[in-house]
Image (cartoon, rainbow, N blue to C red):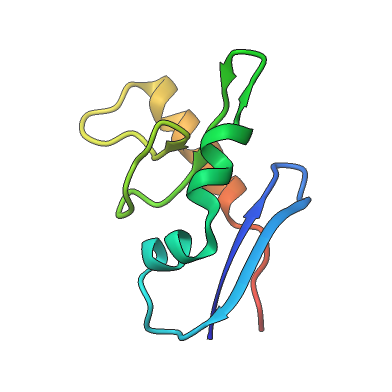
Length: 93
């Protein structure tokens, strides 16, 4: 079983979709959930484009961001580490 969720940095569950067959790719689940249309409008607030931090293996859209790649500056390494820490919200045992 596979689920998709969007969680705020504060730990609030903003979106939950599933269950879906476990072998489905994350982007397939994302498109089936209908979040593309919702996020494209809802993450543009007062002219500021907010973004969701996702895996680099997935498609990057205007409202999605992935970590830095290639040779990184010290600031980019620190930013990437901080953002990756936010992605780990809950682990099921």
